[in-house]
Length: 103
Image (cartoon, rainbow, N blue to C red):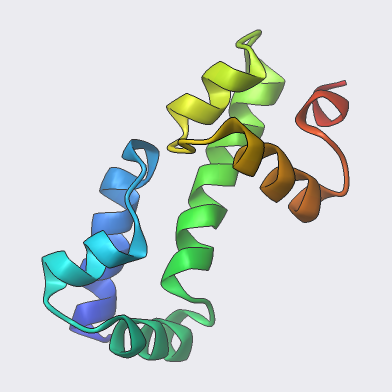
């Protein structure tokens, strides 16, 4: 019901695969990062950063399971600018590498 959270969630959903950052969301909505994080945590139970990652990884899962795209292509298509970060974030989240997940 929080209008700032609703606008933030919509902005994230619409731009998540373009690599949107929390700072870009804050700038677009003209709110501080701490305000956005607090309001999202209260309304959704997760931070803006975790919402961005949740949506990115949902698409990563789909691409890993439904396509033959390379890991690097998947990382780029899902808004991860550094393949190394993608690999470490994926492994932290799933406990396995993207290649292992695909098998």
